[in-house]
Image 1 (cartoon, rainbow, N blue to C red):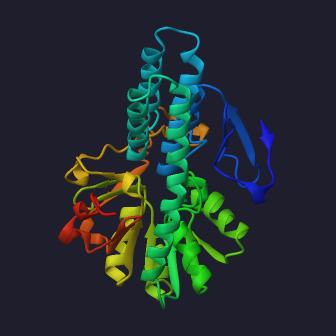
Image 2: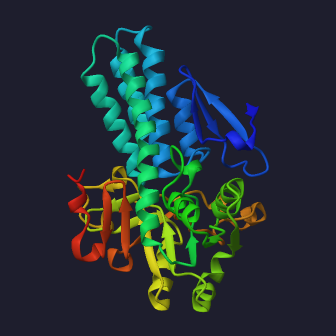
Image 3: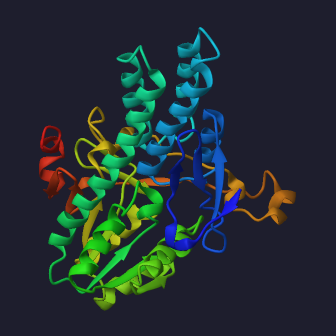
Length: 346
């Protein structure tokens, strides 16, 4: 476990034989990387939210498969069965982020087509997934920034920056790209219960010297009423074919409030976040986490009397979304068109 200089922070660092994962639960007070050499460790890092954000989860899982191949290929004649078991284990780490399953499918396909050097094939595939995500983020940043011309203020939710992706970010990447063209006022919600907005988004923007104003989640409606923001900009963990979007809990609330106040909503995500086989958001599995993340320990004495409901995500209907920005293009008014046109876009 090592502590790093904040100016060089990345969510994931691949060494060639291990994956270093920034423990995002410790930010911003401590910048600490945990190092993993097997798929079980990477699975635990994802499940425990050391690494979070749909793109970053997919990238971490890809490297987890590489570590599995390294571990088993030279030590067992049944290495592929063992790797397949590790792939299934990684798939169980978080149920909502479709990038996880996409990345694992890419890794499995790479191994299916390579028999001479599986280790090299797996590593090449994982590194490509990582590099492609950064390229996609930069493209989305510019496309989203085009929509923000003349905009004075935006509100973002959760963390969608370099910490949640391969680098630059999705929704936060749009804000970064837009700010470089013309400074805008950035507001960030605290994002309970894990406080990703407080601990991660505000910290990331501070590293880039981008001024940001933190608000309590419950202050969003009043902020919108003042006219301070013209767009709500968020990421996504899964997008259905009709444009319904699963994202961090509280996103649906912001979209409803935005509709009431004439504020537009932008979802920013790579096409790897689109579940082409899922018609609507009604079928998206919403992860439920432990009650203990909400309830203080003092309530343990009231088991059976006091409980907590702790969904990690909610689903925003497409009719509440004004634009979905991907690296392949922008879908305006997704309720009318869905996102199918992006499937074969170049």
